[in-house]
Length: 202
Image (tube, rainbow, N blue to C red):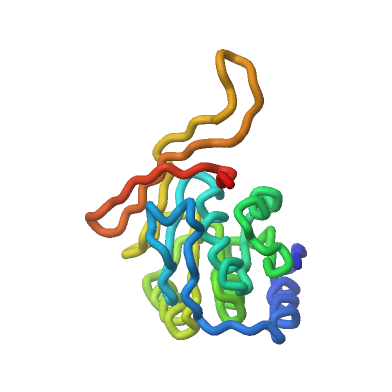
């Protein structure tokens, strides 16, 4: 499912029309096995998670919705790799895309999706007032939804890529098989590091 339009009002109205029949219950979402060493087994309903260093980690977290057969949405990623999402196990039939959104419409678009789906992945937001940030967090808690943001977020767990190397090349020849990422999960003063294979190994 994809909604792409230059008119923000049409984006939001299209979302409302297409999401009226969806069901969402703030479920617990199992984290993809490749990311469990860094972030644990489940995403917490009503929480925000940040990710830095590209969309790979965000897509990996987004797959949690598909593992629990829930709907998810992505806002503000015009070049989102659907092949990569499919490799992580994201159910593309239950993914709502809003590829382009103006900064002034970020909050409304994200809030609208939160009302209907369980996990929303969003591009870095424009500067938000403390009041708007608090209202968005309150809506997440009320819905039991999860927000994944391509940015740091106050009091949120943040995943970032520390290093990356390609697998499959040797002495200048061979075939690229994927990447090995060293990932750090930071929450408060605590951090955890883990190695993540992408695409995930069978």
